[in-house]
Image 1 (cartoon, helix red, strand yellow):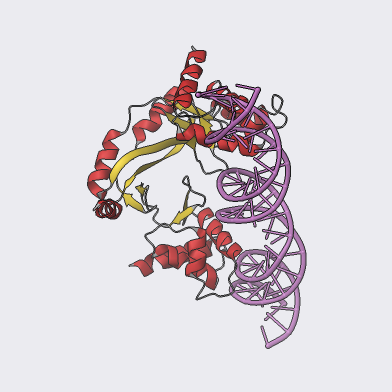
Image 2: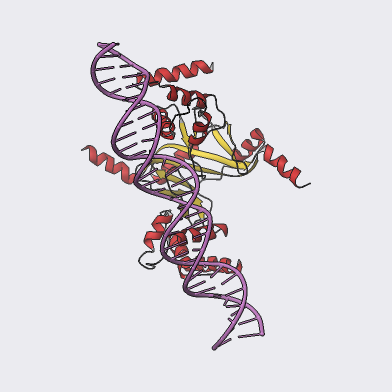
Length: 148
Length: 148
DNA sequence: TACACTACTTGTAAAGATTATAATATAATA
DNA sequence: TATTATATTATAATCTTTACAAGTAGTGTA
């Protein structure tokens, strides 16, 4: 199942003349099997064992290539560094203000907002982004425990 | 009108034991009369004439103090630097993908999304953010002109 | 297989935004 | 006006990301 997705992605890359190097394969594979929306540095550290000589620049380069080929989405939040995900299906994110955890959730796309914004501002609208913020279950429980 | 808002903000600060220095006053005043959502560097450059000796750190310090006192909101987008605004009324932003211009627009708050997200994820939701992206009128016209 | 071409990786330097630190200056208050 | 806590300044440091040059390695062709 997941292997299928990976193979499809590799085929897409090859069709665009992008070479499949071991490092690139590893970055893509890691992202495909990750649900935590890692930063570039997370990925770098995660692959350190497998590729002791890999440069940080390689991670950034590959993330850029994957993004340019529509296989990876870059998420930029308030904190210092970008986060990356492979899940390109239509979904939104909810972010824990305490631990930074990011969780996907589904909601019908906010097309109405887009069309109103277009009408009011005269912009030619292309897309939108939306995130919800709050405290995750784990941190809620931790907070309650600490009060005792 | 605007003077009234400024005076109110100053009173709020004084009540919290925050001193009103000339630099702090200028940053607040500049933000109150700005509609372009400036970066810290924009503000620094704008006040350079009035305060030739002001440090960039002072701008950051003051923006932090103003934010902590609920007078300024920090907007973090994909690009490198944060933007700041004083308009704390309920509104959303639409951003030009060509020139970076940010324009306010009004839309009923997306409470429904928040409550669904809370139900589905178990998070204790506090707020959300949403921005629309597109090409502004000016850039649309510029694009058409360049094609001739 | 040998060659050539191009893309990729690596290591390091550089850029840019923001924060930390220490010394000096100043606003608020009695 | 004197005092004291807070703010400003100048600079160094940090952190993320990009740029660059040199070397490496896939890929296609003869």
